[in-house]
Figure 1 (cartoon, rainbow, N blue to C red):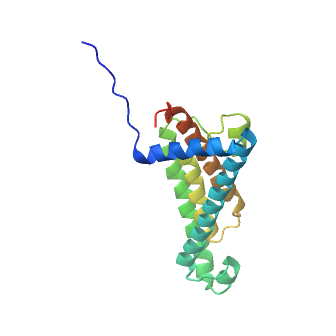
Figure 2: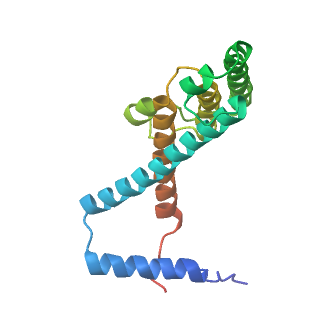
Figure 3: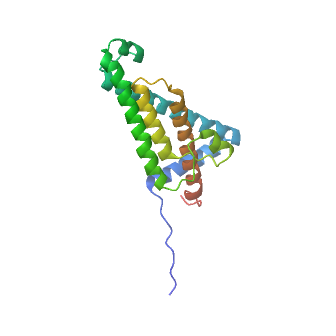
Length: 184
């Protein structure tokens, strides 16, 4: 008995995407430079969206901790002395607990990636650890929103580089596993 393999059918959505892709390729004849620019634009837009989400999350947590929608310095001026002391301490404890628990959970999982974006690009394969990046970002979010002066730039760069890494992984995954055999 011979077992014949049934040809796999594409879902209607994937089929439409492939037809659109073929049409775009034939119509516009994108070169490597144009494709790179399109991916850079996609990553830039996603990075901006993640950055704005982080900023809004910082503002929301700051409001929850202080009850004020003003900037950190202005809101702390209006707080009683005991709360000026307590809010950053609570934020530091929560940030430290986030790092401690997160690192313990991540240590159980064998990591093949890093959270350092420069190392990931220069030494590694460009893969940035999702779990470790989220732990670092949540810790920074708690610190920043409760008055720590660590600055937003680090977590924003971390999140944007994580987005770029995820888009690159998704693109590589699709190029390997979503191969089109010519049938539509």
